[in-house]
Figure: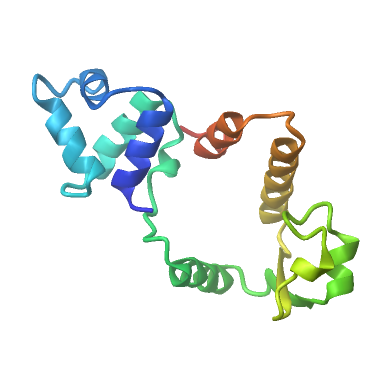
Length: 167
């Protein structure tokens, strides 16, 4: 997802118009046109201004960085580079059907063995306390969403403001 798409998604989540966001940013009378240009990726805000946008949208500024074009290879590249930075910290393993069925309560949509893909599923874990704690926190939020103890909005709010101690 590109930066402009993220801005639009969060702006609409916050129930703000382009004009309202431009006013919060002090962009002047035609500032909504500039917001529209950002949201369509016609223009890309500079890093300092992106921090101002994040502040106006009340999100962690990191939620707006790292644009992905929704292609899996970009995520894989990120993991490859993470492995270079933290050698030996990414562990991959094959999961057979019995592994999946033992853990079916934590795997979305795989309660029925007949719905499992034909190819072997690959598991991923991090031999890194910080990364694993994030994964555990994420799993907890997904479980809360699944159980109904939090809403989709609460879940999205958590994602766009993670980590809580940075803005």
